[in-house]
Amino acid sequence: MRSWIAVALFACACHNDVRDSEPATGNDDSGGGDDSSSGDDSSSFADDTSDEDLGCDKLEIKYDGSYPPHVGTQWILQLWCDDALMTLTIIRFTPSDFASLDGNVATFLQAGDGTISMQAGTERVYMDVTVQP
Image (cartoon, rainbow, N blue to C red):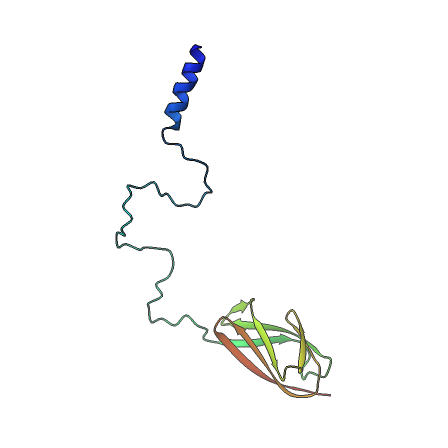
C-alpha cells in the first residue's frame, strides 16, 4: 500500500507542469498571458523597407549547343543572375511552336526567327534566335 501512495504523490508532483502532448512548434505560449507586442520585432530577415535594389545587375540566358542552331538542334538553357544560376525558371518561346521543351532542354522545331524568354521570380530576359533549316 505504501508504494501506491508514493506513486500517487510522485505522479501529482510531476503532473504539476505537464501539458498534453502537442506538436513541437517552437512557440512557447506559456507566458504570463500578456499578448501585447513589446514593439521590438527583431528577426533574421532583411529589412524590406530599404531602397537597396537586390535585383540582378546582369541577367542573361546561357546555352549549351551548336550555333547557329538548325531545325532539330538542342540547346540546354540556363538563366544566370550575375554569377548565380537560377534553377527555378519559366521558359517560353515565341512563336509557341518554335521549339519544344523537356526540362531545360530546348529542341528547335522550325526554321526562322523566334524569341526565347526565361523568367525567375520577377526577373525576365529575352533572347532572339534565328534557326537555320
